[in-house]
Image (cartoon, rainbow, N blue to C red; front, side, top):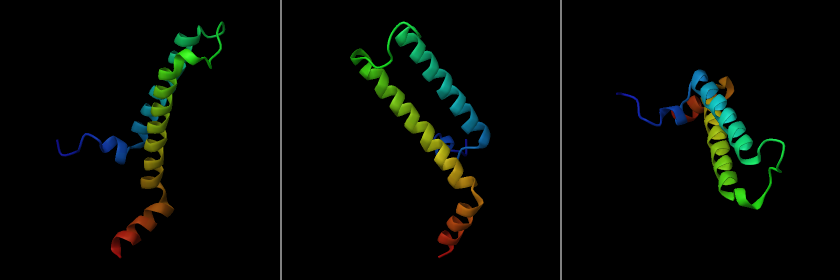
Length: 87
């Protein structure tokens, strides 16, 4: 157990980012279908404020994981971070 529990958030691998994105996309799609009966109701109604909040939080986490992945695996930023650590 050398890795911390939050390593997937700070330094995710490509496979982890893909799994998180697919899980997020499927869950948002299923939540939308469940709360709107897909075609019979409008998506934006006042009764779904809590679900909107959950969708926003989940989207924020996915964006954060992806930005951390890009930050750690982009050659340009990797060289910048290494130079910054050497100073």
